[in-house]
Image 1 (cartoon, rainbow over the protein chains, first blue to last red):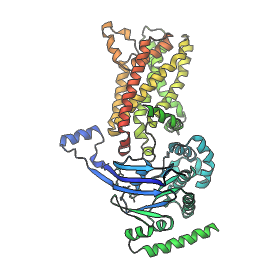
Image 2 (cartoon, rainbow over the protein chains, first blue to last red; image 1 turned 180 degrees about the horizontal axis):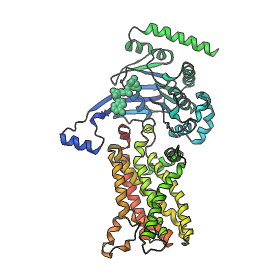
Image 3 (cartoon, protein in one colour; image 1 turned 180 degrees about the vertical axis):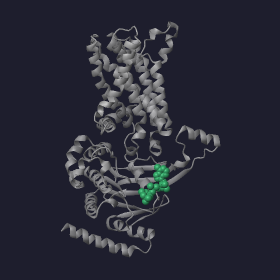
Image 4 (cartoon, rainbow over the protein chains, first blue to last red; image 1 turned 90 degrees about the vertical axis):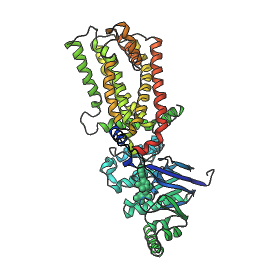
Length: 266
Length: 258
Ligand SMILES: Nc1ncnc2c1ncn2[C@@H]1O[C@H](COP(=O)(O)OP(=O)(O)OP(=O)(O)O)[C@@H](O)[C@H]1O
Ligand SMILES: [Mg+2]
């Protein structure tokens, strides 16, 4: 289907930020800084020389403590950030659900945002109109579809964003924790959809703090520590390194969840 | 420059949606809604027209038409440029979440004001008819100047939108600049009011040519000189080349500063 078996290739990526309190924002501050003779700029590396690959049909989990660079990595892969150094190669159409959602506008209604979000991802209005009903059905937020987004709960927002990102049928799906605000029912439905996705040869890059999800759904995982990729391997290996001694209990949770999902399907 | 055209074409539906969003969101939850966009400049025009045709009469026949023939396009420029300058910062939420060519935001800002401009041609036409000013055939040539003015507005907007990402003071400075610029441009007056030996100074004003063309088409009903039309496109092209060059040079950094 694709010329290359690699869906995402990240090569030696470094992402540098200029920390905000060092950065003058208005002319007054610029002059103030010049005057005081301190114009020191502080660069901070949120990602340091990160390299890895994701193959088509693979679901890769990204784990790490708060501030380790997971969201930054997903933004680089999605093309929101141009990396300070290194290279990112993406083969296929990508849809992403980043930290605080995707490209939506709080003043517009859910229905209007479906179109806007699709247009931002490069789809046409016609394509989005054709998918509108399926998106609404999957999001299942009732009459709120015609209410401005600013009146949504975070779960409702996540439902809509997830529905749009998956209904546009991308080749690669990038998801940053967004499902953590969905209720059990929606989470189950979403994971089922992601599994179907992966089984049809699509690729998923997935950030989570839940080791159970990593174990249950991911084919492979990577661990970030202060911006460095420290391990890239099987979920069990990565969990053992990240949270030593918890593998047994995580496995138990994962199999319980597996049973629950199976019971839902019946 | 070719990628500006390519991106604008590829994302034309997005640009249109953003322009409509701009118009609807700004005036949501207000009774008159989108009419406010027209009302503000309309009132300003009314004041100017009343002042200069009755209170402090100027010896220019059909002064209202004389004035509006340049004030309408000027308003498009000043408002379009202002929106464009703020567009990157205003859309920071989207810029932080999706990889989309950033140029769509200033382009959409200009397009939304182009819609306003098109609507404000209706009152202009009404005034022409009410005052029994001739409705010249040269109106059909207006699109030439609309294109030149849109390009000029976009170029100006791109340049200052980029600067505004780094220093938010820029949008305030642009406001002041617009006020000054309005008075040094022959909109409410004629260049002829000045002694001939000073008139060359006006030619340094890059927006003069295109506004002059508008006035020729609507008020005088004449085709402007080739030099004037050429001048309008040279200024517009120059503004776009400089503005887009600056914008492109910095656009990948915007996301870190908005
Ligand atoms: N736009 C930015 N400007 C400056 N620093 C940033 C920016 N975005 C992130 N950082 C810094 O980069 C580091 C990594 O942030 P990131 O959001 O990628 O972490 P994370 O692994 O997603 O954390 P969490 O688990 O809390 O979501 C943090 O130290 C953060 O302060
Ligand atoms: Mg994060």
